[in-house]
Length: 213
Image (tube, rainbow, N blue to C red):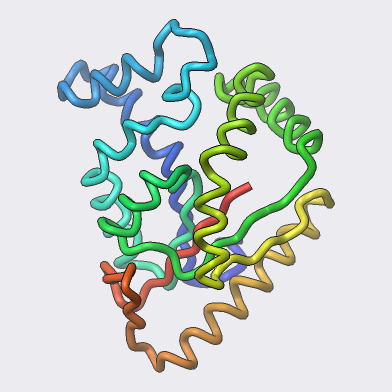
C-alpha cells in the first residue's frame, strides 16, 4: 500500500521491537531490554500471553514514540501495524502518540487466518506463527483486541474490509479507502490539524492509520 500511495510510511511495531530485542541481546546492553529479551525468549509454554502479544511494550513507549516521531516527520501518513492490541495499549497509544485517524479491520474467517499464519511460519519460521501459538493469538484477539476495534467503531473511524479474498483484491480496497480518507481530510482541514479529545498530534500534517487483522 505504501508503494502505491505517495507519502505513506509503514510502522510495524512488532517487527521494530523484535529488532531492538535482537540488537540488545547481541550487544549485551541496556538492562530494560535485557528483561524484554528474556521474556520474549522464555522457555515457558506458548500460552504465556506475553510471548504472543507482549504487554511489556507499554514499558518501552518512549522508544516507540521516538521512532514514530522520526517516521511521521517525513510522512503524509503513518500506517501502524501490531499496536495497539488491547485496551491498556490503546490508552498508551492515545496518550503518548495521539491515537488513530482511521482504523482498518481486515475481516476473515478463522480458517483463512490460520492458513495464512501457517504459510508465513513455513516461509519465515517465526515462533508466533506456529499452530499452537497462532491459536492463542486468535483467542487473544477475540478477548482483548476486539474492544479496541469496538472503540474505533464507536468513534466512527473504523472501516471493515473482507479479507477472505485474493491478496490483490484486498489491497485494492485498502488503497481506495486510505486514498479517499486522506484526500477528504486534506481538503476539509486545508492542511490544518484536527484535534480531538484523544488526539494531540506529534506532527499536525501527519495522519495515523491503524491496521488490524
